[in-house]
Amino acid sequence: MGLLLLAACWHVALIAHRLAITPVRHPDGLAELALCAAVVLLLCAGMTLTFAGPWLFRDVPLPPHFTRRTDTKR
Image: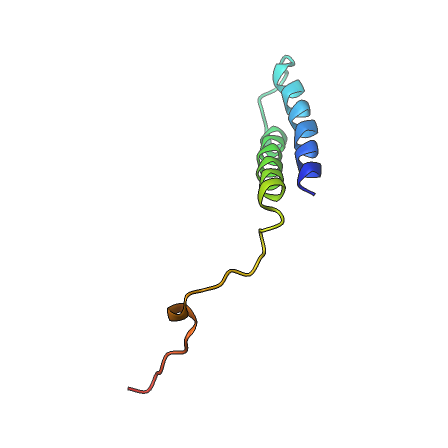
C-alpha cells in the first residue's frame, strides 16, 4: 500500500512540475495549492506505510504504573 501511495505521489508531482514550468496565464489559485498539498500528503503517507507499515498498529506493552487502576476513595 505504501509503495502505491509513493507511485501516486510521483505522478501527482510530475503534474505539479508540469504546471510549474509552463508559462503562467493567470495567478496561482486554490487548485495548484491543493495539488501541492496532495503531493505532500501522499509522500508522508507513503513513506509512513512503506517503512513503518507492519509495525504501525502493533500492541505496545505498557509499564505497570500506566495500567494499574487507581483508588479514588481517599
